[in-house]
Amino acid sequence: MNAILFPGQGSQIVGMGSEFYNNFDIVKKIFNEADNKLNFKISDIILKGPEDELKLTKNTQPAILVVSFSIYTVLKKEFNFNLSTTKFFAGHSLGEYSALVSSNSLSFSDALYLLYERGKSMQEAVPLGRGSMIAVMGSKINELKELIHEIKDKKICEIANDNAEGQTIISGDTDSINFLKIILKEKKKRFVPLNVSAPFHCSLMKPAADKMKDKINSIVFKKPEIDLICNVTSMPENQPDKIKELLVQQIYSPVRWRESIINMHNQKVANFIEIGPGKVLSGMVKRTVKNINCFSINSIDDMKKTIDELKNKKVVITGATGGIGNSLVKKFAESGSKILATGTNEDKLNKLKSEFKDIQVEKFNLGEHSKIESFIDLANDKLIGIDILVNNAGINLDSLTIRLTEEKWKKVLDINLTSTFLMCKSAIKKMIKNKSGKIINITSIVGHTGNFGQTNYSASKAGIVAFSKSLALEYAKKNININCVSPGFIKTEMTDKIPEEYKTKLISRIPAGDLGTGDDVSNCVAFLASDMANYINGETIHVNGGMYMA
Image (cartoon, rainbow, N blue to C red):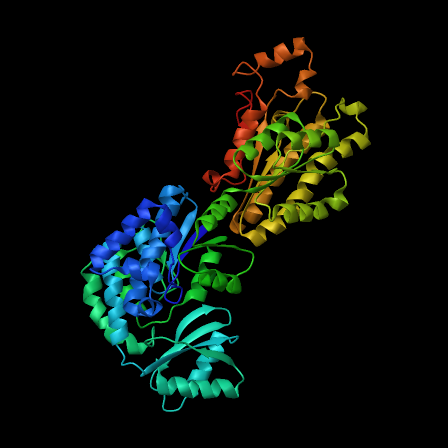
């Protein structure tokens, strides 16, 4: 799942958004709308400066909204970005307004008005020189709270931004902040004074909040299309009246950004996408949570790379050189997935590689059980992660049971069942770190019906079904889906060898009146691997033309 993040004050730079302004008419319209609403050329300040004008809080806040919303609009309307896998919007301080506009909770025009007024109110709340802010690096938040308590004759000295692990902003009156600096020096704590016009996000901002309360309440807010993670609570919110209340509180309350990131991560967000000027938020995310993907979009090239990266699922396919395996590779290649295809026939793998040039191939014998974990490590490194595992490899060594040797029995179960167990075991470790994953195990109709002369093969395929159900119970809470596809009789090299007389009798038992194709199977696998199947787990989908109905 994705979360889209919008930056706040401090990310501004003269010329931000110019590439989008120069290339998209829709961005020019947004800039013009901002000029008309504010009754001055905010567009000139954004694109040309001077820097001193852009740094004024009353200009910075609407300026960052204009640029962030412009980039988001291009992403959505010009690049058709799919929001179906986006779970949350979040904005750092003023970025909450960008998030609300992008989520269709607040109109762009109303947000411009509110941010301009917010910037003026915050700038006017404390006389120049009466307030200060410092950034403290490398210290825990609770440790800093204890140090603040040590300040004698303290007026206002408060946590303003809990940005990330080891990065905290403290705000307050200048005397109290100066005293805290002395304590920090004594404790050998690193800090940097911030060049700001006012002490934001502390109690000194309550006069600004009082001014803004009526203005915010006078504006119509709608329920956001995607839940907002609020700075004040670090939790999701979608009720308009509550959002208004929290926007007022946010002016004088700490920005709980670190907790917001952790909470989103705990809600299965694996991709954090920063939209707007700078890359500050991405850095904060990386310092706070591990095993996630961060993307910063403030150029057209950034946008293209992010879209490509997000749509390219990383897929491992075993048994890729057979009829069904070929169809699986083709299906995932068509969707732009990054594929590692494996099999035992090097010539067939090379042929597959020549047909689908962007895939990677690896000769590997699943019977070498001791090497499976190393193979998954290799696949994970080559693909830079594993999103989807398709266990398609299998063999059959048919014989009547009284003639079936123990060796043949074990070999079929080793390849078909034990290797599936080991592949899943190793891949799940990677998927847990990534906070999500899909495993599709290919079983067979004979695992449900049995088949003459195939006791070993039928047992192995029935075992895969029971194994997959149990595995799904164990890892559903980890956002990992394990399902089975059970093909009937499919047109492959194997079924081509069936005598025509027997094949005719076989087809007469299939209500659809024909054998299936590899595409029938791969279409089903692709569905289970997609986000449309996120609530399907531990199931077996039968692809057999009606020959067997569970």
